Amino acid sequence: MLRRAIAPAASAARRTFATESSTQLVDFDYLRGKAMSDSARTTISQKQADFSKRMSAVQSAAGTPTIDWDHFKAALPEYDIEKLQGEFEKYLASVPEITYDEQADVAAHKAQEAQWESFAAFAGHRLEELAKLKAEAEDHKLHEYYTLNRTFQRFDGLLEKEWLEWRNMSFHQNLRTFNEVPEELTAEHKAELGSKLAEKAGVTPAMLGLKQ
Image (cartoon, rainbow, N blue to C red):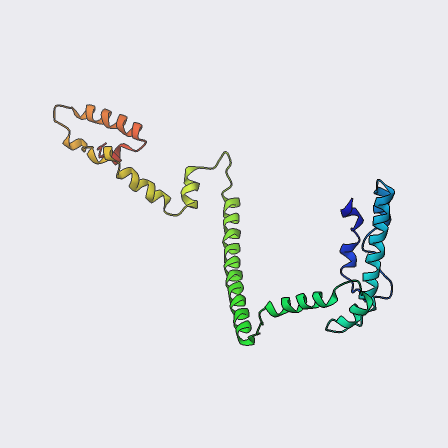
């Protein structure tokens, strides 16, 4: 309920207090309508009068860079303006002075610009790479006629890599050539055995040293 009552404050806070027409920051009528007793409505009316008095004092103050404390002492005699002034000045004294270094600001700005230029160059380079990758993916889109040869064409060095890995396999290193097979095997048996091994390994008999 209170949030709805002060909803206009958000927009009114963007305006200066020193305006000719008083902007209602709190919907006191809404609060009175929600009050459960006459005493509560009376209290709300008193708060409204007090609030309006303070707003009038603020709006009647001259628009100067400094606070006219004498004006508020005369307009709000029921408040301890001197105490408020002392607390305000004490707070201002506790705020450290801020010195503006133009050279440091310019240097920081240039560093930020250089950082963003470097990032823009990196992003541009990556976009070019992604565009090439997209075009390559479109060119090598998988379909039912896509062969292993196309894969080797797309990835340069893949064929050599797979071939070297196959050659470095332990069982291949331990294989003997057919010329090293004992002589008790006939040439026909050697050819038959070599053909079976080549078929199982997925290579040609010549790769296993079989003479045809």
